[in-house]
Length: 400
Figure 1 (cartoon, rainbow, N blue to C red):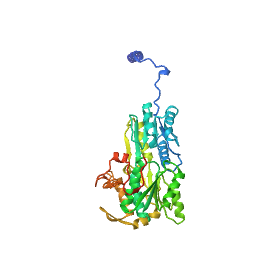
Figure 2 (cartoon, rainbow, N blue to C red):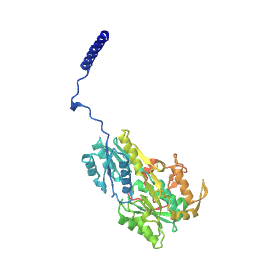
Figure 3 (cartoon, helix red, strand yellow):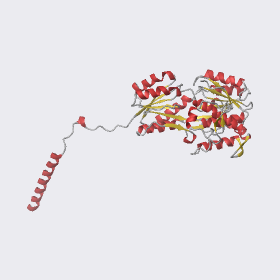
Figure 4 (cartoon, rainbow, N blue to C red):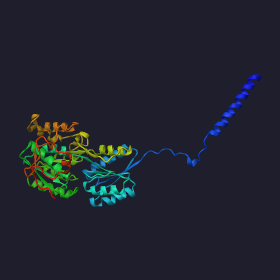
């Protein structure tokens, strides 16, 4: 027992010596104020500038649906928007979003905001800018667009097959390359199934003006037009078409950007639908993960940015399917085929990863008879982005 007690005493002494040594070697305890704070989750604030009201049912509505989508999807994201901003007022609104709202990224969603966006990018180098539908970029300013010319072409196929007067119309906002490109794509579709038909253009010089859009639509109908596509952010053209149809004069319309079939169930054949949400998701995810760059996003059907229909999930209004199936055309590859089946084949081809078909494939001639694209030649991105001429079956001029 004495031997055991001696061993125990030695162990206690060794333990005391080790503890004393460990305490002397330990760093001094940090003061509470010097304790590292818990890592906070990264937050991103995004500002959106809209050219029209969020309830326009067209361009601005579609963008705002995309904004709501990403705000709900990402818990680290906060968004703010300013609607109905005149293009000449963009600089002031950008200043507000930077200085008062403290936005990390600002989306400017109209072609006319382009120059002010680039100036702001130089003024605020620590803020990221994304401009929709423009072509100018900076180190901290990228561009993006959900391109719809493929859908306008498909709408043109329908218009060419359905018209009884060989007169299709287009109510156009501004003579920007985007709008000219879409008019041409629509006209190319019309011509493919109906070489005798023409496309008549009316300019509004406004993105959102229901009264002017209504007046333009009525003017075209008075001249014998029975098919109407448009670039204007209200449902006015659709409503005009529905009114005439209910009175016994069938007018075929093609809605713009947002689902509009409910406003014209007897007139809307199809339209172009856009999903800005998936594009905003891509851009904001890159901002959050520090992988953002100033690339030019040019998303088409194959990326899922755009689709066909007057409402989601319905490429063609069932009311007009039988009529499109009854119209037959001859295609160099598919042989004799109904216009309905041709539309579905073309949509499938354009969604394929390599894009098996593009509407802007030569030979294509302009209004003066000049060949703009040689046989089998496809238009380049740069040509489409800057196009300033009409194809040969368009009636109208491009204002300078």
